[in-house]
Image (cartoon, rainbow, N blue to C red; front, side):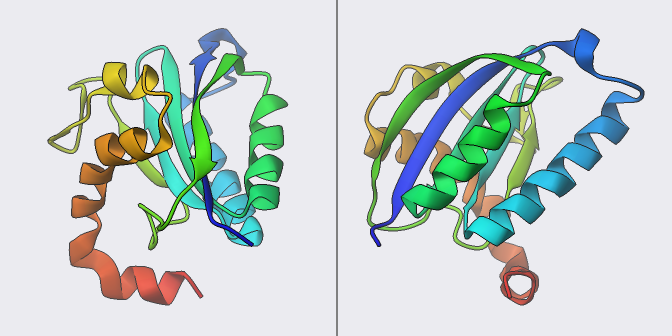
Length: 150
């Protein structure tokens, strides 16, 4: 089955978040990573003050299941596909779901990500090049990641 990638954005309805935002984020990431592991999907989630950008890669059935789950999340609206298509390799081959919190600094742990260019790129290869710098943060932990991607 060919490898596919999907990039989409969504607006966050913060009024639909119950309790602590940080606890809600942790629980959501835990569920998403478990789902991605079951579906053989890897990727990244970028959180800004009012939206998310999500990059997913895997087989088309796994991507569809994960995307369907996102579509049922009452905290998200205006889900917009940015790019989708076949790809030759995974950008996040060692991470079920990398998380980058861009709410304060606009960067992912010091790595600048041009979310405006990403959101306006309908080409999956271009979107992959924009988001790929995030993987540099993962490289030092590759042994741990290999053990976690059992």
